[in-house]
View 1 (tube, helix red, strand yellow):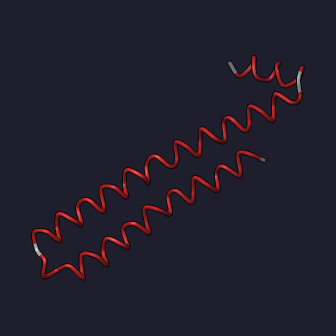
View 2 (cartoon, one colour):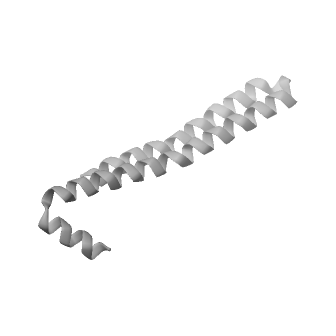
Amino acid sequence: MSQLIVAATQLQPDLKAGLQSIGAGIAYGAAAIGPGIGIGLVVGNAIQAMARQPEMQGTIRTTMFLGIAFTEALALFGFVLFFLAKS
């Protein structure tokens, strides 16, 4: 497969840019799936915890926002990799 791509890029230089764009788009799309699922799990579990113990609502909310921030950092890594793959 890689030999086919090498041969195609030697014949048509525009194909290389197109393949890089497609690969970068797929990579960023795959990198966004994990944080999306992670944020859903964090928020869902925080809502369940607040429903079970309403008196701990402030602590749970703070922990939830920290979890969202750390999970969203994974999406930012994917975004940086998108630009690195593009160049």
